[in-house]
Amino acid sequence: HPTMTMIKVLLAIALLAAIALPWMILVEQRSPGFLNTSFSVNVVDRIRKGSEGHSAPPGYYLATIWGTYFPWCIFIPMAIVFAWKNRRIPIVRYSLAAVAGPFIMLEAVQTKLPHYLLPAFPFLAFLTADALVRCFRGKHDDLTRPSYIRFMGGWAVVVALLGSTPWLMTLKFPTQPWGALVFTSLVAVGYVVTVFVLFQRQQLRVAVVAMGVGFFGIVITMFAVFLPRAEYLHVSMKVADILKRNSVTGPRQVVMQDYKEPSLAFYQGGTIRERSKGIIPDELPPWLVTTRDVYNKASSETKAEFEIVETVPGLAIADHGRSVEVMVLRKRDR
Image (cartoon, rainbow, N blue to C red; front, side, top):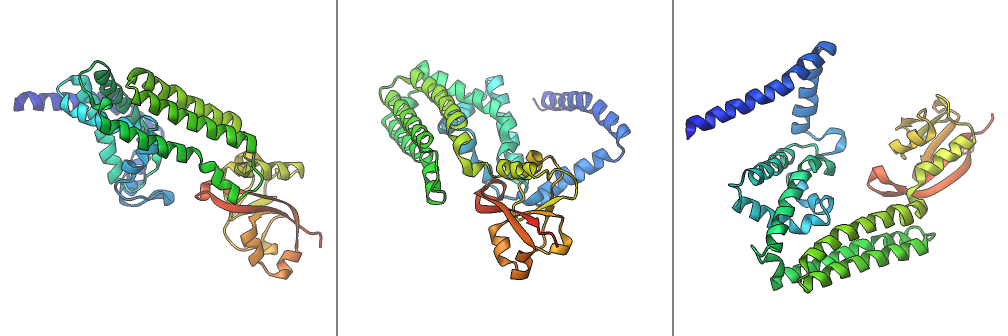
């Protein structure tokens, strides 16, 4: 009934105000102008334009969710269809709204990052679990259809290929943790083969458990075996160690140019600063962290002003995974 619907909407608004209004009043009293700044900068500006270079078109989350919600992303279409069919169930309807609302809002906002959608994942996980349980109980046969088995085969191939992507780094960095690399790839291949075979045999419950437990095993393998040994990912740590060994931890001692990883500041101690101009000795502190690209563009006279302490090859993670050779330079005594 329209009247009852309006009453429910007004009650919802009143409940929201009762929760949020006291906090808003208190924070505005302690920091005048906070709410206006938060709304204009963190809401309006982020809707109109990409903040800090994190702009993306609509459809961004539709594309990235297949990676951020892995491995359960393969069940998203089924989960959404089942949720819509069962939307009369209150908890399903609530979860569907908790997924659709943030998804639509964040797609409309210009500033986008993959993790912005994470608050909706618990509700998406509930809808996924609800769909799977309905299949386990025989209410739907979607997971046992031949078309879905073929779809799982394609999923297995894609995951196996993604699990082999670290091998591409051998083209840029010949020095590799070969044992860890081989072991990680074998774990990934074993994972997808096991899941696919279980789905093919229609052992659905075991297959779903294998998907979750197996992926957890892959994560442990990556973080405990491969990543600690992949030296090209540890550029900031190595550069910071070089600076610390030379007691370059105080203010106005060092700047970083071209290689501007925030992690370097944390590892170094927080006194390193960013710089955007070229290598101009008179305008630089005693130490400089830059890249081979910038150094090669400098004049011979400028290069003569500096001593190369050490170089560290690797990836600039914050710069779209760019391959770099980071150089730690020290001014020569004049």
